[in-house]
Length: 306
Image 1 (spheres, rainbow, N blue to C red):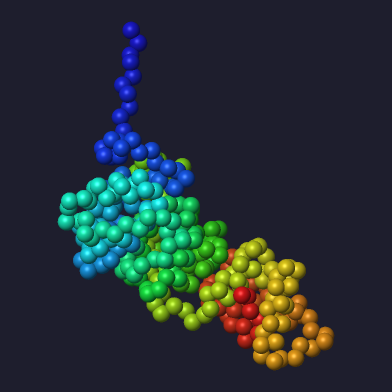
Image 2 (cartoon, rainbow, N blue to C red):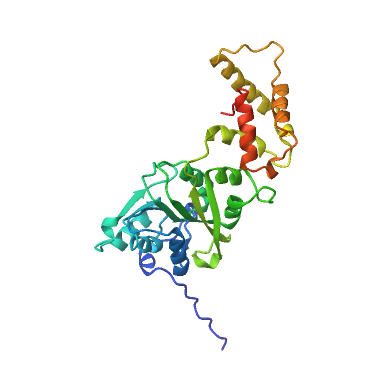
């Protein structure tokens, strides 16, 4: 008789199995099942007994209960009501219940409360908008230890000249110090995602650099539209010149500055770039100081990016 293959068993959270919960990939629900990684993430966050911790996507609470053991309070943001119910049941009737606050809904649309640290196994599809929501949050938090898709994490820490260096890299590094902590294989999750993961530590720069971030963001959008082109070429695009000319006319109107009849925005932009020897520079090799010099030069001449 042919051998009957034994049914493959998987380690599934008992309570979740009882509830018949199927994880929703649309919400990026990949539950971290390796307790050693959870422990390591919490060590890297250096949590204190007086801390309020923000957790995004707590899922079934494997990380949440570990955090609750170490801190004063956990604010958990969860979009899936099924998992909210699971998490509530997990702490019900325990000393942890009073230390857990659950915010139900989309974290990108919510006003974030005060917190000292953020620790999370992130839903990967909201990684970029959440990072900037976090970095622009006030009052300042101490640090965030977050798990991302590996390539996204590599972009966060990429340096000028690196293949993955992009607008995300320079914008993040302007506002924070970012360190790669560890790489995580896909088999540490249930269900396994299609990509490798990585944990990073983000520490906001406090005080932040003395610039208008909206202006900065507008500049880097133009520069990184074609990151291998020179700045001079990037600023010659018709849509860019049209937007800058409109902004400049608004500036002149507000400051009661007469605009010469022969005014040409293209010539003015070129003069500014050449004045700081930036025309031949390319976004992929420029660091935050380089972009800051360009921004100050344009703003000093009344040209704005927002």
